[in-house]
Length: 232
Image (cartoon, rainbow, N blue to C red; front, side):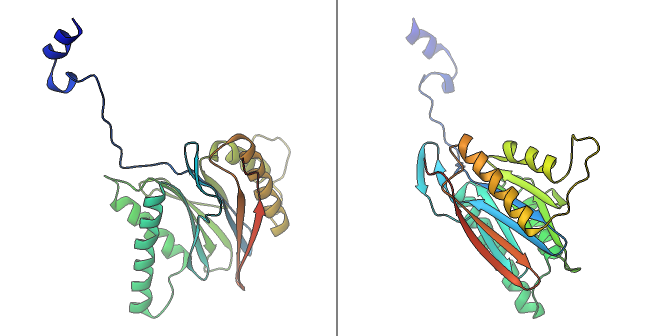
């Protein structure tokens, strides 16, 4: 009876076994960025995984683009590397042609255009771009996979975004709170919020953990700090 049902159906239903292929893989990762009046911090966890398999515990997901701009990417690691390679090539072409480095605002628009160009087969990547703008202020740009761009002062993306973004909305934006004035953002406060957000996320998400690499960008340059997270 089962054989008759298979033989009587259309060609694609005759074999009960299903062979599926996806060009994408989710390699986890979470990124957070917070901007202040004269600085911006951008951080990511260091776990590179797929499901229950951990490929690396020391993979930084923040890429330097210019002396004042960095990009954090997570998702399909093959797409992350490809997007970063193409973006770096475009920045190099610009610097050779104009003998100058692209501004943070221009890099943000370039990334949006590149993502939109691939909208029919998008990069499976969650991106945050952070840097110092022309006025010397910290700025954060958040993207969706097909290039929609939003200019913010704080943002989270990646696997643990549903846990971290509400914390940032509450503690930085003062959302859902009556009679509370949002705090003035300092480097110490930004670092503490990033640390607490990742510690909380690592307790509840297997795709986030092992460590945090926090990058700080100011008009004077960049600094980097590594903080350990749980490794199980």
